[in-house]
Image (cartoon, rainbow, N blue to C red):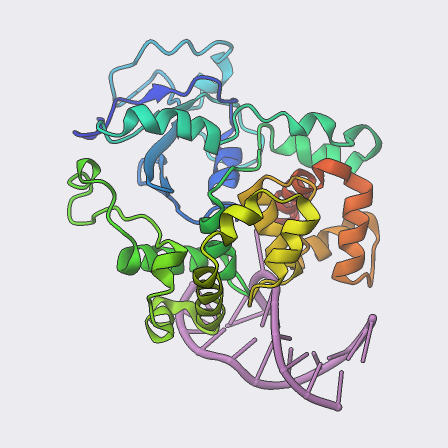
Length: 333
DNA sequence: GGGTAACCTTA
DNA sequence: AAGGTTACC
């Protein structure tokens, strides 16, 4: 059944089809930290002042909500196993459906399509023809894209990320929103029972929070970096807007001037928050991947980053996301 | 410049 | 240990 106050599940026009594992990777694979899987395997997430749910079209049998007029072309195989275990990354692609609070749905839908980068075709320029391993990774996650997230939120998320796992980062971010974020516009607010949805705090709001209160959000030593960054941004109110307009290298230089932002976090923010697809974040997973799959034993992060930029070119960031996803699931092999 | 420890907390 | 950065040798 669909929730009262929420729109019925509706196919998202223009969205690619996804195998379940790819949708999970895209929403909860380390790009974003505000998507939470629900008991019915749908996803609920927030970005900016948007709140939405996503799911993959369930099969015909046992469909809990009255079937809409969703076309479902070429879906004969997927329908045979609507609840098939996500045993392999390659289960059959299914169509994406969305739902949102009724009051905000008209603005949510186009925002969602933009956020999910449904129109992005960057994968077409990946050098898969000359790189068998990259081709394997791409084939394993068909439809995977780089999200288009709000710049400020992306910066906050990755300032939280240092030596933390995704689950922990999500906890920090949830606490920051709960304690320091503004409630979403009233129309959406009665919808989640006792839990009012809140936006993430803006950087201006963060500048008014004490470091101690930030530490109380489980930020640990990252609290000092976030406070320092908030102070710098508060001293220069146009910092985010100005940086967002700069070309890749200049934007990176500015990001690196913030406390707590080094090479890796800068590249993540450039990639996920500013759409600079040439950024190639190198973390411990990428070191493992390049060592194991390309024989780059003993290479430093800076050397691996250089290799990535040269080898993968203008879509290096997307290549990184495929390699990252593959390594996290196939790392042992 | 490269190598190493400290930084917080929790899974 | 964990998806890093910084400070200091």
